[in-house]
Image (cartoon, rainbow over the protein chains, first blue to last red):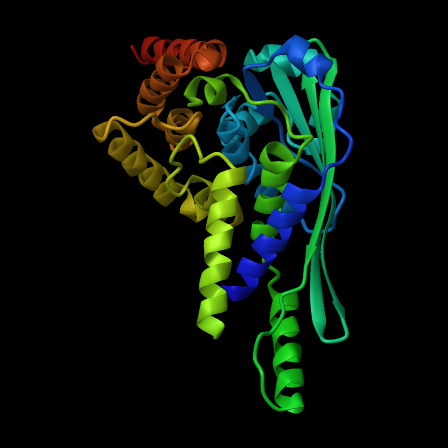
Length: 211
Length: 124
């Protein structure tokens, strides 16, 4: 819990303080999409579960940003009925075709570049790296972003050095055996869609609720 | 000492969070967590459907907007479980709640109704 908290704070601080150059959002503003179709994910990592985890973690931040997000599991189901099972295959399909099939204003493509846990010197580092691309129903790229996040669960015990070392080793071994990617994935998505200065602009449902 | 630091820390976190991030627009129940559990273990699908249905009822009872896509997801779970009538009812709710979903939901409903009709006629 404590670890999670410090990770959250660290991530949060970097998200709020960093001020990279603002991206050109004129294409986005011209298209002014109300709805976003999140299609199944392309996975360049080795973990076969990764795409489903990432898919499940996308609707909440995007809807919170004020867009209608097409139900991701229903989308997956419909695409499967049409014979599209693999993210790779779906991402090759022209955006206007996908957008027409669902009557969506825009299509979000997400690719997983990294999703791994590395064990070095008694610590495990969990890393995720995602690429996001939003394309209008006419096929114009509206916005894109890349996000890499890593965290090392630290052990917070104090005591004799040997006990500390052992605790670090056990901690790392547990993380390596069952790395929990979800908090990191959720943070990455939140940063990209909500916290970053280069996040997509507020959607129609966010602006109407603004006080 | 430790506790003081912790409290300061948490207060700072709470303040900065409210300052920087607008609160969520919707309640999602167990949707996110449940969805990836169900992907990992397909036997969880039914319990996920029930959880989201209960969550939806709770939202409706308290007059809160149901998050985008939830009605449709429940509909699809029903469809996959072989209950097209319940699926149609849920898709209709999604369509009525969210104008952006109208095209897709109308197409899904018409498709299912056509199938239902064909089935009825073949069984006559």
